[in-house]
Image (cartoon, rainbow, N blue to C red; front, side, top):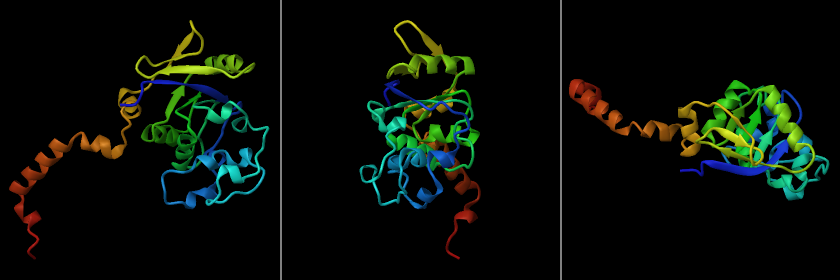
Length: 213
């Protein structure tokens, strides 16, 4: 079981419609791996040079004005942004890059639908708040580095000692995050039912399992 409390420094991206190509450009989709994309996150904003799959972040010329290249945001675990985050193409690499960088949660007023669902498959929690709530959180984070505490079980975000915002998410999706489950894990929860069905089918239609011919 994953720790049901996410606590970390908040990085802020104050813009709408950040699409998956901006999160990770097309040239990095050639890799057949599902991990190791953190160095290419927000590549066009984070670096001043052109990267390759065989390059790591320390070998690149960095844009030191970009928030993720500034301390302490290099260790951010929570991303605060605006409307329609993760729109555009359906590439799952966008979530892989966020996850591999170290982000455990993304807070926005809305998400691209496919991106939203891909987050739950990869242990990144997407949180939807109202635009007024998002505006307030940006104000809180504007003056100095800020930490949020996200309680997955209580479904709230604590941003100071006495104030919090609640969020809504389906229990089945939250279960993926809390217990670090992918699609295969979800299927294996029904292993006994699957095996029982297979056995019944063998009994009722044995010719389907006759491989002698």
